[in-house]
Image 1: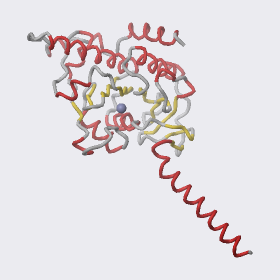
Image 2 (image 1 turned 90 degrees about the vertical axis):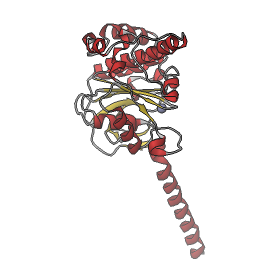
Image 3 (image 1 turned 90 degrees about the horizontal axis):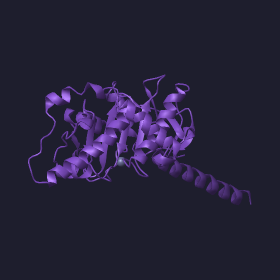
Image 4 (image 1 turned 135 degrees about the vertical axis):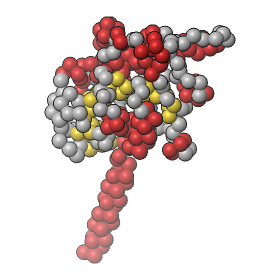
Amino acid sequence: MKQALGRVDRRGFVGAVAALAVAAYCAPARVAWAATASAGPADPILIEDLVAANRILAQEQVVDGYGHVSVRHDKDPNRFLIARSLAPELVTADDIVELDLDGNLVGASGKKLYLERFIHSEIYKARPDVKSVVHHHSPAVIPFGITGVPLRPVYHMAAFVGLGVPLFEIRDVAGDSDLLVKSPELGRALAKVLGDKPAALMRGHGAVVVGGSIMESVGRSIYLQMNARLQAQAIAMGREVTYLSPGEVGKMDWQAGGYDRAWDLWKRKSMGRH
Ligand SMILES: [Zn+2]
């Protein structure tokens, strides 16, 4: 009897260990657990702007149920803030989590995270000047990524495009894949292609856009999308297109710091809707 119970107990124990092993194997992709200490509470205005950024990008149809935006923590440059895995339009302050630059959750536990958080973590690592990152799948930019036609600046609102928008080909590093940047290695490869530029296209997937503030990354995302639409329309007209010259691009100082006046409008509209 004792032996029989022992067998049952052993089977139960083995089953529990197996279940834990499966959970541990699956967990990194779905749920992350806090391992390091928090940098402390971020500036409430930063959180408010990050929530607004999520809603603005949805309102402007840069993102739909997918895509994400993050901001570097104001108390620690080795941390950043981003929503837990959630459609951007639904994000509230309670959904914002803190991650380290390896994409690990900090100061909370058991939250489901974006699979592609390594886009953000590896760019923050490679680019100390970057304070905010947007990743989106805007349909307007997809044709440029899949044809290799370079995005060029067609109007003053998107002059930053003239600084260069390189193309990330994930096959160069991952071969055939699901195209998601879901590991630090892939994030590093993307950050390398981005280099010191304001944005990069991701072939068959979308784009990543960076800025020195949330305002800048969001403004650039909106106008990158608009520039792509307008450039495609202009090319379809079949005549030679006059793009902004490098000299004109260099004179767009008013955009430095990022679209302040439009930001106030976007923020009020997006927050007023909820
Ligand atoms: Zn994506």
